[in-house]
Length: 215
Ligand code: ADP
Ligand code: MG
Picture 1 (cartoon, rainbow, N blue to C red):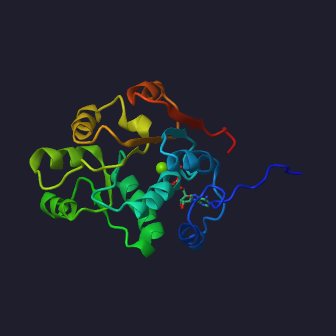
Picture 2: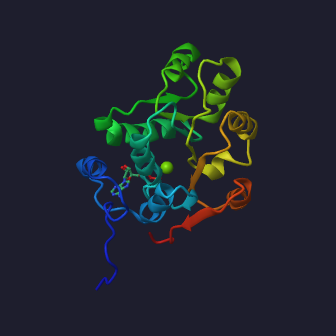
């Protein structure tokens, strides 16, 4: 018999309309990473979360970001960096599905598409920008028609792949364009030394959660 109480999205203080959107796509009970990280993110804490692929890391950051966005929808609200185009589109899809009823505007900034159209999208002040580091760094260096200065959330998805490798220069360019005061959310399938160091990099206490291997 399982004596553990089942935690619901309502227990995590997620708004009813978001819970309805989730239920419509078959997301009814939080996964372990969601149950542990969502309350921390809603509380304003930086967060490092690790759980294996397929454990729902995207909604662990997307749900609290969408909820906070409703309270203060001004300018580009959140920047999500991820290593590949495919992941960028998958993340954007999850934001689009849950944010549909609030008219959430997002844009995907990845290589392989023309810079001009992308630049125009950025200028329209989307709420959420999902990007690969290389292309976003190109935009920051080539035009000044948009600003990341009002970003409230920086998410590094697959953070272990983004840090301490060939993305370093691009990530540095992007970080320079971000406000110092922001919430940092780092998600990864595995905990690496680089990820451990992030606890220090952010300069403040970071909530750290690693899902048990069997979850
Ligand atoms: P990860 O980033 O951890 O590899 P994803 O966030 O891409 O995983 O989620 C994998 C799939 O699981 C997605 O299709 C997503 O819609 C689904 N999912 C996420 N959270 C839940 C949940 N609480 N219940 C059911 N399915 C979920
Ligand atoms: Mg993922």
